[in-house]
Image (cartoon, rainbow over all chains, first blue to last red; front, side, top):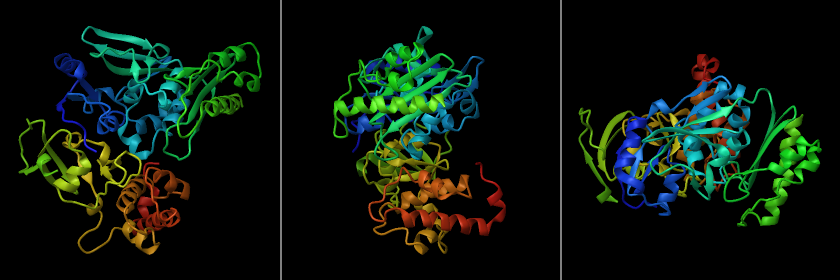
Length: 274
Length: 183
């Protein structure tokens, strides 16, 4: 399978990337690792007229301890996220979940920014970032702005990013010793989650988000409220599928996905609570 | 496919035109003019005529097209040739010398790590990346490292044995390396 023809330009810096997208307009797309975009282009579900390659913008590849949060450059490869000592210490849920994205080859090419910006509800990282209350930094021709993870995904594969904006940084609040669990239900090691759950607990606080339970990653707000009101994990987890809108496919019916959301939420919270 | 590819002489020019791709392929500088949409797997196979890199599923699943990109395993069906510009690419042809098999290849031979052989080049390159980082892998380490490579013949048992065989042979050949690695 070969993508439809396109023009190709390389950006050497963030500023050049934004200038190039201004020049080429909304028919252009950024490409980093290409592990979300190229499969779509090969199927011709995406046919950008220009690809702006940001894969060499090395100043967007970093993991930094930034006090109350960890700052991750959008171009940081999954393999560098999963093996980052800073993230293993301060955001172990993210480091662990990233080690279950795709397979080793995919994790050597794919980037955290690409996965987040693609806004696929079946991807693990958008839900993990949502559970952790992450903030995204977008840079455009008029400067930078912050977007809360909860405001980012607007519908299936659509995000709050403007056409001329580039996601440059992911800011993940430090977990400060919170217990956490990540449950990904799939049939083969490298598969997408049929359903996934990312959860953490610390004293009275908690965060729970669901993978592949709707057109966007979903915050399980009912579960979190019930926990805050003193419900047991088993009782709170029963609320995990409330308000979700999962789609049926070859792997799972709607009812099965809802069952998985409840069961996996209980498992993830049990681990987070132990 | 030939219309997407034209091999040209390597150049010292720093201002390489965008559609010119120059890579270090198995240690040798190679350059080509390509359409941006040419996949790395096709540059290697149809362009440079190294057909040891197989395209299986063409959807980032099977891992038959795995090559080493700056020493790390990637699926060459999910990279554009232009993205590889300026980088090192190692294919299965880069493992053996003219007279000697690589220990990983010996392992696959000795432990019967293949039947039809289609997945084998990708398996061996994923295994090489593992052993470069971790000379003392456990069986679980091997299975995890090969989780992006599918085999439809062997049931994986002998592939895992082959990699462990190669790890031991490499350690015996260079005992110092067993202390090293980066894990």
